[in-house]
Image 1 (cartoon, rainbow, N blue to C red):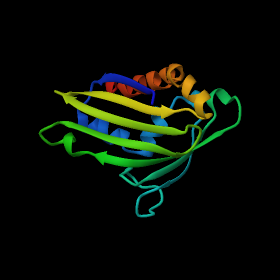
Image 2: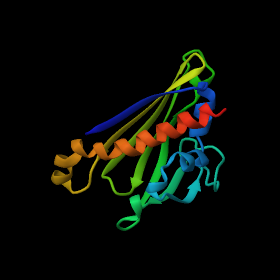
Image 3: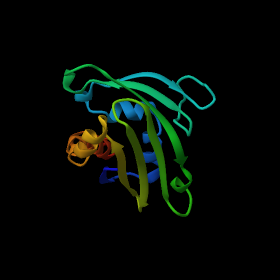
Image 4: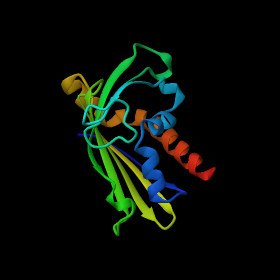
Length: 166
């Protein structure tokens, strides 16, 4: 399965970067405007509507329409794993994983990893994915990650800028 990875050093402690990435507001702030993101229902694992923090079992229904071209693409994402222990513990690393349950890809698993380095944080996004259209999508999979570059470059730039202002 093809994989895309991007790492960036953020000028802020791991706990602050982790907390920012753990909310729907963080998702909104990090998504480039050209993606035309709309957030629909957000539900916690207990059925709570619009939870403050996205914990394991939370789902987010959203849609995007990159550059305003073509039909809107609907997407349901579930947080399947969330390990915040390293934000304060001795290992000083944390991560959460979201998986697409419905949307434009056959498979999408996004791991958000955070590693403390003094008063800074190394942010690492890793996406394992499979494109639609069976064997044709599999053949196009590796080069398709070029398309992720702009979005993740922008997300990481926005993260650095947000914490550089503080």
